[in-house]
Amino acid sequence: MFNFSPKGRFTMKLAGATAALVLSSSVMASGSFGGASGIGLQNSYNLGKTLYYRQLACEECPLGKQSLDVIGAQKLIDKLNHDENFAQGLKGIKRNAVIVYLKRRYKTG
Image (cartoon, rainbow, N blue to C red; front, side, top):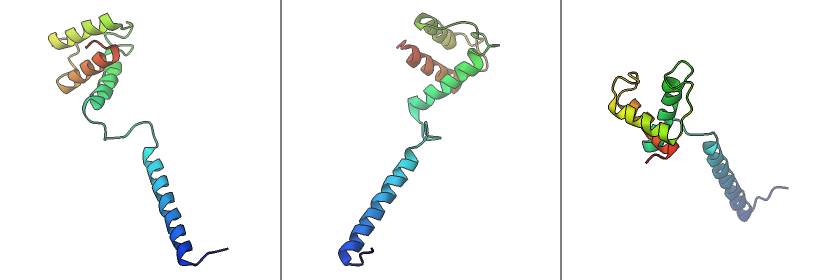
C-alpha cells in the first residue's frame, strides 16, 4: 500500500509539490479580473467605462437616451477636450479616462 523506499518518498514529494503548484496557480487565476493590479491604459479604460455609464449615459444623464457611434464618440471626445462646462463632474484623470475609453471602444484614434 505505502512505499517507504527512498525512490517512493521522492515520487511522493514530487507529486505533492506538483499538486501544490497546480492548485496555487489555479486559485490565483480564478475570477474575471484582478483587483488593484490593473495599471496603465487598461485601468484607464475600465475607469472611463464606469464613469461614462454612470455620469454621461445613465437615464438622467446628458447622453442617456442617445446611442453612440464612431462619429458621435469623436464629437463627444472633442467636447470633453474643449468644453470645460460640459460634464463638470469629470475633471482631470476622470475626464481623461472617459476619453481613453471612448477612443478605444469606438476606435477613434
